[in-house]
Amino acid sequence: MMESGLSEEEQDELHTELEKLWVQIRIQVHKIFSEDFCPDGLRVAVDCILDQEDLDRRWLDLPSDQAPVWRPSRTLQNHNELLQRMVRSRLRPQTKDQPKSPEETRLSSSVKQEVLRLGGVILGDLLLLSRSVVRSYPSHMDILNHFLKLYHNGFRLRLQELTDTSLDDSDRAYLLLWANHSYPQEVLLHPELRDRLKTQDLGPLLSPLVNERVQGQQLESTQGRVRRWLGKALEKEEDLWRSAGSELIDGFHFSPLALDVMQVTDGALKELKCLTPDQRPDQNGIMSEAQDFLSRYVRSLEEYLKENHSTSASVLKAQLVCEEQLRNFVQSQEMPAPQKQSCLDSLSALRDCGYCSLTSTIRTQLKPLLSRLWTPSWVSGTVPVLDQLLDFMSAELDQLQDLKPSCRQTVLTRLHQEVALRFVKNLLKSKKQSQEEQEGGASRMKADAHKLHTFFTDAHPQGAACDWTTQILGQISEVLRLQDQDLIQLELTSLIRTCPDLSAAHISRLLFLKGGQSAASIRRIKRGVEETRIPPAQTNQSPAFFSRIQVKWLHDKMARMDLTHRT
Image (cartoon, rainbow, N blue to C red; front, side, top):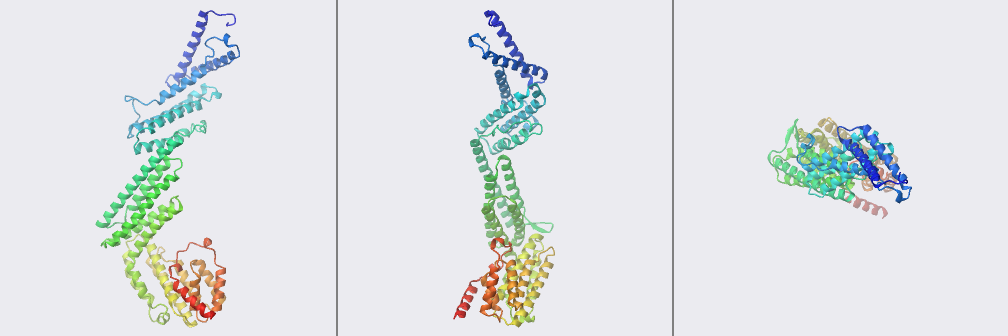
């Protein structure tokens, strides 16, 4: 028709017909989000679009001066621009007179309502497109993912606008929640959509710089909030210390402080975990607040104890419960090793404070009551040294009946170890013994170790007796009893495996106490023991025992003995 020549009027008529076709196409596309949407009508419209696209390509093969003014018609481009305008309209901010959903009305601010509405529109539209619109388009057009890019870019631009405004903590947290958690998890990974959406090239809703800025603001705000809440919790606890002491629950002293601290800290960690894709730096920041709190907590309790209140015992019993709960919480957290160790050190100081105060009367009497250990009267049994101590401790430990059982077990276990430590200290300070004294002392020590074990088991049947402590005393008594050098060396090797902190100086002193051992035999036994010592990294994590015994005087003594031997 063009080659044969058309009049201007005929060309205008053809152009008008083409424009009418585009109007019909646009009407069908506009119906996508309306109630009178017709899949068949849209399919015909899409076929027309593709036909026009094919005609445009055919005209491109001819000289431009032969083509009519309406070629290329760019119908597909116009269709895509129409979709973009439709998506913009769907994501346009609501006016005041537009109704809100029940979910939106429950939110506390317009920013939250806007973010929720946008997310709901995107999810609802993508589900509609997936269920009823996709089949009207050929597969190669991948219309669902075309729409996804339009919605994603529109949502990204709107969130960018919101982040440029002054957001309070709550609005900022909600925006980050949607950008980094709700949108990726609940929209892009919706069960009906996850296998059909191509999300790898979308990119984040918030650019890295914007995301870092907003996250930094939120972390700073959250840390400040945690710091204030923990400070108020400690102030409240301090007021209770000086007024009512602590409350009794099920007959045991209890304080809500640890639960409050864990709730505040864990809540902040969970919040940040949802707000940020990689929450580790944020977790470290929150745990640093907990770390500072624990330091203040210990100092505060120490200051309180200096005031000598009548309620100190009940307060300490409640704080030991807090220490146990907080220790379990800290150990369950993933955090840098130095930070975790700092928290555990503060908790150990808290535990030490409670233990030392609650057992101060017993501990001050340990040395005088056990002063006659390793004397002939103790070895022969004529003076019941240990029985006197146990009678004294029994009366004192009755005051711990209102301490939570697990905490009471910890106190009794530590007290058991301290009594055993006194046995060994007195032994190492005693004079060189004859074979008869060695065997008698070993027998008495073994009997007392068993008596101690029975006493602490009876004091707390759930398991307060420290088998590890009883084992040490038994092994030391065997070292004293044995006379064969090879058997002594074997027993010392076993003792080192139980107590890796058994030093060469301690071994020297134990062997020196055994009368009848020459300097050469002592050196031989020590050399054999040291050759079988396991490297520190491979030893068990036994509590400190021998390292709590001062060894300076042992070194001096052994140095003098070695000098005498050389002379």
